[in-house]
Amino acid sequence: MSLDHTNVSLLLDTSGSMDGKKLADLKTSASTFVYIMKRKDGLALIDFNRNANYLYPPTNTGMKLIPVDDPKVVQDAAVEKIESLQDQGTTNIKEAIEYGENQLKHRNSNNHPKNMVLLSDGQYNTGGNPVPDLPEEIKIHTISLGNNSVNQIIMKEIAMKTGGVYHHSTTPADLVEIYNACLGDTNVSLVLVNQRIILEKYQPRIIPAEYASGSKMLECSVYWENENVRYTPDIPSGNQINVSFNGPDGEIEQVVPYAKGDRFVIFKIPVSNAGQYNATVWYTGDSKLLTTLAFFDPNQSVIQLHAEATSDSKSGMGNIEILANVTEEDKKIPATINVSLEYPLISVEEALKGNHSKSDKYKPDVSYQGSNGEVQLLEPKLGNKRDHLEIPVSYRPVFLKNLKNNTKKGEVKTQISGAYILRITAHGVSPKTKEPFTLTRRVSINVE
Image (cartoon, rainbow, N blue to C red; front, side):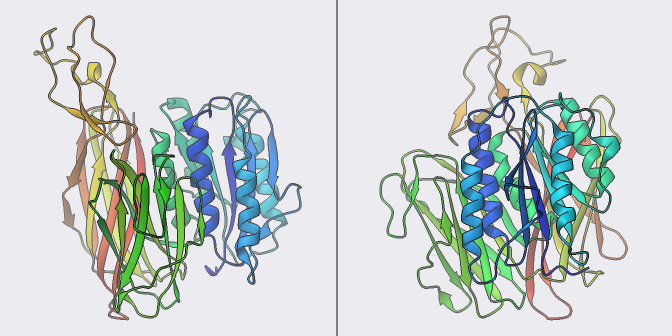
C-alpha cells in the first residue's frame, strides 16, 4: 500500500455538551490537521449531533482531493466550514461513522490508506450502538474527550476493532497534541516532534528536530492557549508570539506562515539538507502561555516508531506494560527511546483516601496548572468544608529495559483508575542512510 497519499474523514462531535472551550479547541485542532495535509490527500468533514451532516464536501459525493497546484484553496474552504460549527443536540456516533464510510467508499483509491478520526465527548444517546456495524478495511482512530467512562470504553472498542489508535483527552487543551499525533496515525505525515511547553515573558524556547528524509519540505505547527495572543513576524511586544527557524546551514530567512488563525500558525519550511532544525519561540506577554509545537515530515520516512501499552489492573491496582521499537523498512533498528507517563487527573479528596493525615488542618503542599498555564498553590484547608479541587496531572519517566531484537520494555505500577497518557520519543541514526532521526508517539490507555 502506497503512503504517498492518504484519505481521511474527520468526524466532529458538535452535540450540546461540546460548548465553550471544547468546541473552540476542536475547531483549532481540526484546522491545523487540515493545513498539514498533503497535495493529493483526500479529505472529508462530517459533523454530528442528533444527526450526521456532510460538512465538506457538502454532499455525499466522496472525498475532496487537495489539489497539486493550489492546495490552500481546498484547505481554506474546509477550515471555513469548521469555523462555522455550532453546538446543539444529542450524540449520534453510529450515523457519523456511516457518513464517513460513505465518503471514503466513493474514493476509488484502493492503493492508498482510508482512515477516520472520530472525536466525541459523551456517550452515544441517539442512533444506537455503533460497535456492531463498524466498516471493514477502514481504520477509525478515536478521541474520547472528558471523563465519561462509558464513552471511553466505546471509543477504545471502536479503535481496537478497526485497527485504529485510541486517544484520550481529559481537557480540551490536549486536543491539538492529539490531532498532531493523528496526522501520524493516518499516514498524512511523520510526526518528528509533538511537544507541550510553557512560555514565559522574554524567555525564548528552542525546540530541535532531526530531519532525515529526502523531501524538500519540513512542516511546523504552533498552537497557544490564550486567544488574546497574536502571532507577529517581527520582534514581539505585548501579547505577541514570534517563531523563527535555523538549520544545519544556519538561520533560515524569515519564513512566511502558510496559514494562521486566532491561536495557531502553520509553517512549511523549504529545506535542502538533512540534519538538526530548530524552532525558536519567543513570547512577550505577562502571564505564562501554554503552547504546543510540532514538527512534521511530509515525506513519510521509512523509519517508524512503534509503541503499545497494556494493563492488567483491577480497581486501579496493577501494572501498565509498555513495548516500543523503531523500524526502518520494517526491520527493527537500534534507537534511544524515552517514555514519560502522565497520570490521571484526580481530586484532592481522592488523593487523601486512606491517608491517615487527613484532617481539617491538613493543607497539601502541591501545585496545579490552571487553564491559563499559571502554576498555583492549592490553598484551601481540607475537611468537611473543603472545596473540591483537582490535583494536576503528574508525570514520571518510565525505566525501559532492553529485550531481544532492539525492543524496549517498561512497567509501571498503578494505584488509581483513569486515563494514563504515554509520550514516547526516539532518536538515533539510520543504519542505511547514516542520518540522524527523531520521532514521537502518544499512546492512551484506560485503567479500570
